Image 1: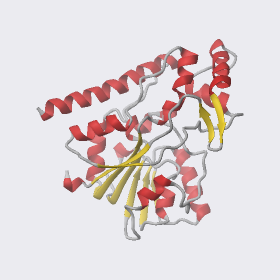
Image 2: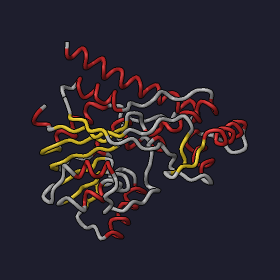
Image 3: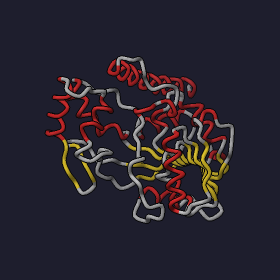
Length: 286
């Protein structure tokens, strides 16, 4: 019975990914979907590289929860760590942080930010996680990556294999792309199938016999990763819209209708607040 349930959950996960890929490939007209893992997801992966943050910040609820897993003797492996949004503040608290990140641009920015902050206890492996044979660490962290991974089971199993103490996954109830959904609907008449958020991720873990602890983070306003002047070009890239087309006219109308200036940035009318969660477990316990 368990294997039947597991296969159903895995099939549902993969079907969701394939539906997303079909939509995006048809939109681009080039057959370029999601690919096998987060390293090949390209523009579909939301990026925080334009948001430099203080590595020593103490007002970030996500960092504060993650810091509770870390001591001065802890080694952290951050899978898909991007430009160091979480790796850098954790490096100020941990013995060492290793970041596995396939994007060369993100790695370059991470190295620059680490140098600027005087952080030296950080190592970067510029490879996709699927291609990295080692290292292991006390804490294996994976933030906003799993929902991009079509072959999620071996990905999660590898996270466990590399963890000496705890696996920690940071995800959202709805994935970051939810903030763009109203624009898809107005510009293209429909939106892509939603990538798996926290409920689907928990469903997957339970099917694998993993029963994690879940810590919810205080909701925050969902904002676009741009300012108002950059919003048209940002959304053109995200929605595969060419400037000067009828779709571009619909996009500008949607921008006028939906964008709201807030102290946190550009929010989108009608989009629910982002609800982040920390999902963690000890591999030895599962």
